[in-house]
Image 1: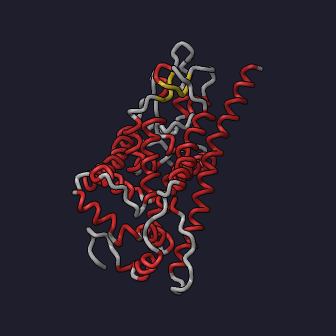
Image 2 (image 1 turned 90 degrees about the horizontal axis):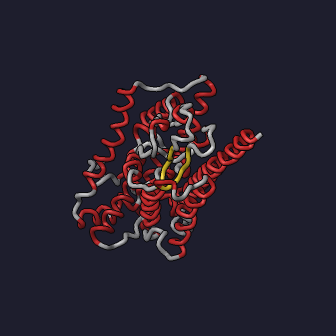
Image 3 (image 1 turned 30 degrees about the vertical axis):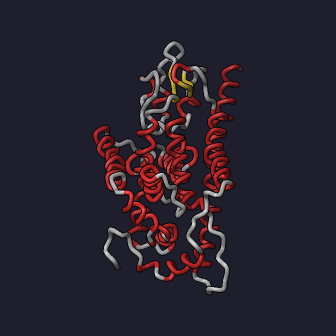
Length: 343
């Protein structure tokens, strides 16, 4: 009876993350629809008012956000071109330092879609494919190579060059260019997305594990976090269910404290463990245990309450005037990246 009650409690806690994931995924869909209305209104006659532009769409501009954050550190000036993007990016970095990579498995809609893709693949194909150890290591290096490329391109940039890019036409209209990339997608880009989707269907977390530089950055920063999955050898019976359940191939049963940068704090290993207390998400030394409900509240505080606070304080909306947005949109296909050739 006690074991059944424990299993029931774990099942109920599993739905906490699923609910948070669903909430952020739904928010992303509504955000996309609202931004689509804004882009459509840019093509309207000049006397037609622009639809509201949702600032949170800047969460999908991580490179611009990194440049704004770098500029802030170098100049002491907070850019107002894409302020919401810099806030969300900074909160993701802070969450990795404090709570490990929970952003990836609780908040990020791409992470959520990737997770459910491989779960659907397992149901239909009865299993997910596992790459060999050497192939896994080589492919994991791709996301770190991409991260290194962006960091080496951005961090050494002089203050004046950062400001020129941030204030330039390409960055100001980057959100609309991103939208048009998908709305007017080329055949090549479409096939690449289809291929990545199929790979995510077969291999667990293919995009997140091998290609996402954002996740690579958060993973490295999460190494500094003081919380994580901890195993009590005195209660663990080495059944290795945690190893089989972990979507990121971490050998949890061999660790006392899971410090791996691949851990996304999904709690799957803890929920699969048959021995109560053998695995816990806690501060080092188990001074304080964080249950799924507490962890969820901390993430909601970071990614729901704090953005609303910055919005209330007046640092959220872009300072690009409506007339400038319309002017840039009229020539958007002629605006290319400053380092790229003009089309």
